[in-house]
Image 1 (cartoon, helix red, strand yellow):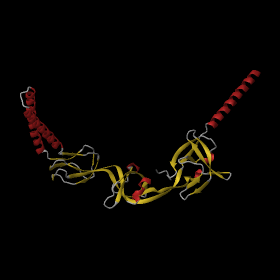
Image 2 (cartoon, rainbow, N blue to C red; image 1 turned 30 degrees about the vertical axis):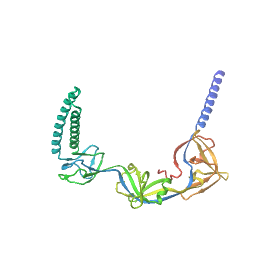
Image 3 (tube, rainbow, N blue to C red; image 1 turned 90 degrees about the vertical axis):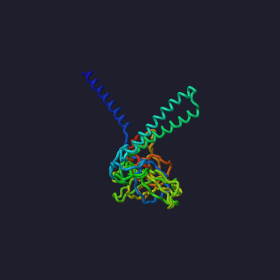
Image 4 (cartoon, rainbow, N blue to C red; image 1 turned 135 degrees about the vertical axis):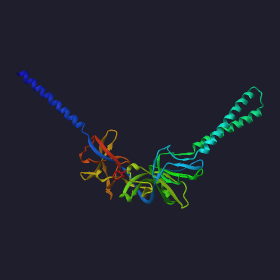
Length: 358
């Protein structure tokens, strides 16, 4: 009886010890999920609006390299075509005849050249005669290649996949070499074109952000990326800027639409004291203000005192203290944290990206 009691007590002690051990491990591995932002230096940023329009990033007027009666025009405006697809054909009757004549001339000159080459190797032919025959052979060969190319050029093919925007001619018309037949556009990628003054182009090195607003689409506001800036002004003394936008953001944006482009830039890039962060990152303890700073190496948080802070109109806070630019600060879940606690960041955004849209 005593042995069984001792055995039961021992089992109880083991179970209690194991339970305490598990509790410690659970407590040790307790990881809080939080949200965070990166501190940004406060600069005197400005924004200016410009009228712009949307256009396709790729456009081409297509023409034949040869001329003649237009035998077949296979496309209509608005039709989608694939790369390599035949769009139109010129009557190739005369080109086939020319090719046959060029081929016959080439084969004749080739035979002569081979015979005279053997005679020359046997030293039975003067060098100047051999050179004349060789020149005639090369000319016939070039004419034969030219005739083949001309016949191939009676078919107009699409250099890329896209839509027929404009059809300049009608079927059965007589067209000249280089005369535009159709206009092909590719709307898979879109760009926004705007013009700025020579006084504003001076700020191009401080351009920070580009956004496009479409009032006709309910105020749709999307980010854009700088594609290119013309190095030379046009006759209007304006510089053209091209921005690229992602058409996958919305299928409602079409070439030809107007938009308002907002360019964010810094005037002289003057930095003011302090850093920007969401105001809910700041918390108070015993009449002192703090934020939680995130250590990416240890994945832990440590509190830092905020010497002074000011809540701005846009919901951001301007804080001062022992901080560095791009330092990661916890913005949500701050009231549940303790010094040195491990955390997992659910998602981060720049302090200047209010709303997380870019």
